[in-house]
Length: 269
Ligand code: MF3
Ligand code: CO
Ligand code: CO
Image (tube, rainbow, N blue to C red; front, side, top):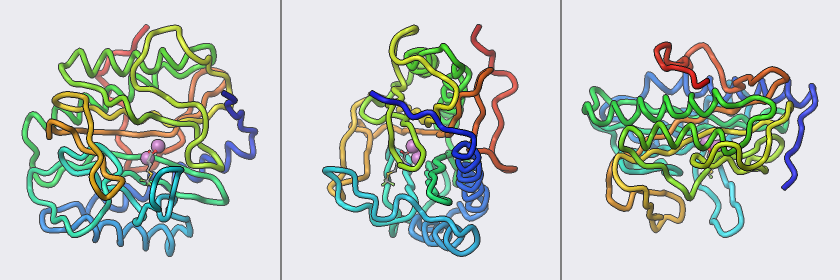
């Protein structure tokens, strides 16, 4: 495995792409309401990316080996959908929780981030799942510094999510990112401390845990993209793109509307 080290110019371009991806989420938040369709959210984001930001929506026509081209500009994964949900006619209703995943290309570089959104008031169980997934992502990010390992990141995430009685999806993971959407390394959201590749300054990758309320097994829908929980339990996901710096890390997918690290979440030693 060869993990690219980004130079200063590449890091600057990734900072811009990351901020723009996060700003799409800031933009779309107020439209997530009872009665809107996921297809309408896709159209709004597409227009914002192309016309306001002059970014390219990376998902549109994205076709990794073995996949048909992805038909939309964003991913909307509702309730028991884990990831890669294709926007369409689905009407959102109060109580739904959904992940919106945005990847933009600006000046040839990718920024990739996702958040959970509530339609009206979620159930206590749904809110808790989203919170624990958010905390798990942050505990993974906390591990990112030179000399730490990929296993340290995965372990921190797994320990928290499983400790709260939830399960971690194994089939999908975070990824290196840059001029390409998905690069080495794979960032597993489970693992053992002090195992796997060691982090060095200039690496850029995503951390994007998918956490299920029930069992971890998945199923792929017949659209060839949408992934759901096999037991139909709720699933949540959060994603940031992160740079390894000389002293720790810098989160690249930041904007004025992006939720901060929970102040009360204890940092691991
Ligand atoms: N944004 C997703 C990720 O975090 C990938 C989506 S691929 C798509 O890696 F084609 F479904 F958009
Ligand atoms: Co990603
Ligand atoms: Co993403």
